[in-house]
Amino acid sequence: MPHRGRTTAILLATGVVVVAVLVVSNFWDIVWLLQSDSQRIQGKWKVVSGTEFQMRCTIEKQAMTFKVGREQVLQLTYRIDVGQRPRCIDTTRPDGTTYSGIYEFNGDTLRICASNVETGERPTTFNSKTDGEVMVLQRE
Image 1: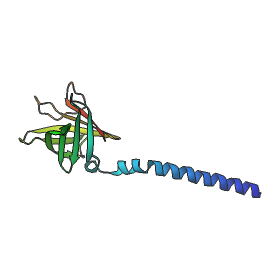
Image 2 (image 1 turned 90 degrees about the horizontal axis):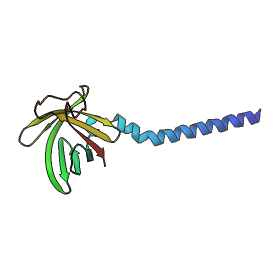
Image 3 (image 1 turned 60 degrees about the vertical axis):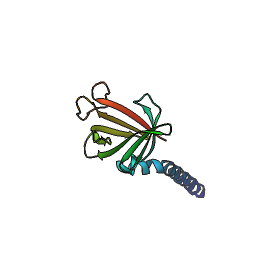
Image 4 (image 1 turned 90 degrees about the vertical axis):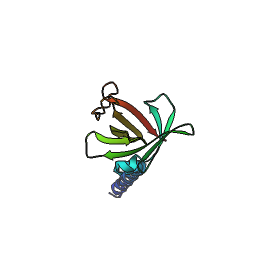
């Protein structure tokens, strides 16, 4: 019988170690998921599609700054609404022009679809052919 108790203890200890490794390795993923969208959107992003230029975007507080190289090419203010599905984002240019859009996170990827300039209506899907301009950003 002592041998059986030792085997059980080893199996239990192994299980505890496996669970601990899984918890630690997924800790930052869990923290990321628990953050609010206003926290998750903050940071430095690389625009990976939706423009022909190699742009970077820095999002701080309520401002989005787009740069090509070191040159700032566009600064917007933004407001998000997580109560809608899909989630909504409104961006405003310095001249006061506002664009309605939608956004979503997928891990370290942020996808934004801005309203079609002609209609000005908020998109309902991420279809660039019918709803507006889609931009995909990857967290740096």
